[in-house]
Each structure stands twice: as structure tokens, then as C-alpha cells.
Length: 314
Image 1 (cartoon, rainbow, N blue to C red):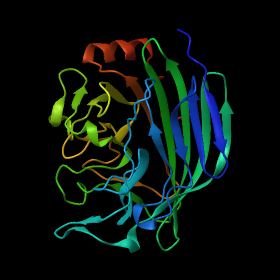
Image 2 (image 1 turned 180 degrees about the vertical axis):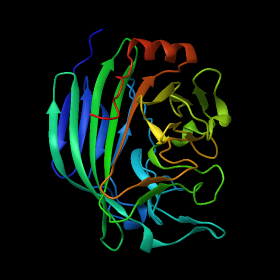
Image 3 (image 1 turned 90 degrees about the vertical axis):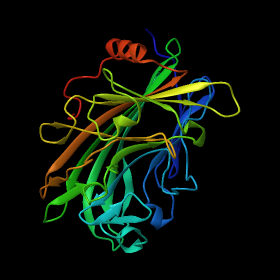
Image 4 (image 1 turned 60 degrees about the horizontal axis):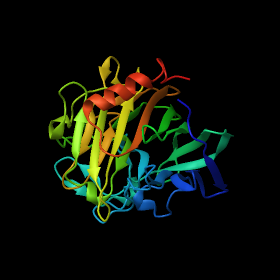
């Protein structure tokens, strides 16, 4: 099957946008938004299906720091690199701006534009509100695989995080800090408001709200749009080798109520201790489909377009 051509526009210092057939489907905003309390970080928004339907939410009124598809860490050695209020065990969510860190864009090592794909490699610095440099990140994002026959296109998101401190870097979530079933941390998608109450599918017989906190190779979120009579699906997949802790499959953070969100959590209920100088590697694929998708259709797609083995380390 032949992929469709794409067009790329890089507005230097602002964003990288990908279009196909004159329709913008992806925009990566890399300076991040300037409000420090929202956890300054790059994000991808808007994302659209090949039918032109919007499948990301941006700065929703309930969580202003949710921005499309983003990578952030909610608990990092006692600091918040996610944005917004910070969970403190026994006290709930607190306004603590002095512990809200940021993920700062340093530059692109590679921007490779081809007829049917875009790949770029970005360097970032993770720093605390006080300016301490705690980690460096090399982020590789590939956009393409535009297949109109399947009504799909894909994002491959790979990250390598290096601990710059002279002490272990503890990667966690509100659940590792004591709040049950709130294990969000890592690559996270916030859906449009209309997707509230959508359908969640998983491998085998998995699905629905019980996917919260469960391990699995993939998760799909099917949502209905306002204004137009259409449905869209987002498929989130772990590359082979992704683990929360050594030998333990990563768990999903997902909600359909009171708002739509999905996250293959880095550390749902168990912290990752990254030693000084150590590197954490993770990779995911996100497939955006115009239309609904059932479990059989998803499994057929995954069989036709399998992820490469060992893709978490390049």
C-alpha cells in the first residue's frame, strides 16, 4: 500500500505543521505556552483526522495545562513537571508554583522531510522553577503513514531521558504519591469535550472504564464529534520493550468521564528510580483514524502494520 504525500511548514521558533492534500493534520508547538504554572512544554495541537475532524483539546477550562498530545511527568522527585496544582498526600491538590518545572526546547538535531513522512529529533532541558537542570531529553517524532484507504495516519513518539542530577531521579504519579487510580505520567492525550463518554477498547476482552490501571499492548478511544455526524478513533500502542519498571508492563491511565484523556503511564503505581547518568527509553505509536473502529479492525491493522521489535532503543 502506498502512503500519500505530505507537506511540511516549519515556522522557525514557533511550530512544525504537517498537511496532506491541503489539510493540516498535525502541528507541533515547541516553545510551549509561556504560563509557568501550566508547566511550559512542547505539545502537538491541533491533530485532525483525514476527514478534517479535530481530535485534540487545548487548555480546557477544567485543566488549563492539558494541551493536545503532550509529554510531561506529574511527579518528579517531589516536583511537578506536568503543570497545574500538585497532589500532596493527605492534603489533596495544592497551589504550589515553586515546584512546577518546565521542559525547554533547546534545538533540533534533525528535521528530515520526505515525500510521505517527517522525522525530527529535538533536544530538551528539564529544569525546576528555581532553574536547576535535572534532566536532558532527546525526543524523536515521526509523522506520516497517511493511508486514505484505511482513513489513518500515524505519529511515532520516542524519548530518551537522562538524569543530570547526582542523586536518583524518581519518576512517579499522583498514585505513587498516595492518590488511588490517578497514575497519570508521560505521554498524554486530551480529547475534545465532545469525546466525553466515549468508548474505550483494549486487547483481548479488555475495554471500558476497567482499563484504568490495567496493563496492555494497546488502547483505543472512540469518540463522537459535535456539529458534524462523524466518529473518530485514536489508537495508542506501546512499542515492544516499554515497561513501567523492569519486567512489568506499563499500565493505562484513561478516563471517559468527566473528560476524555488517555495516557500510557510511565509510572502508574510504582516509581521509576533513574540513577545519576542513567537513560530511560520509551516509544509509542498513535494512530488517528477517521471513523469508528472495532477490536477486530484494530487487530487487523496492527497485523498489517506491525511495530518494529526493540523500537524503544534506536
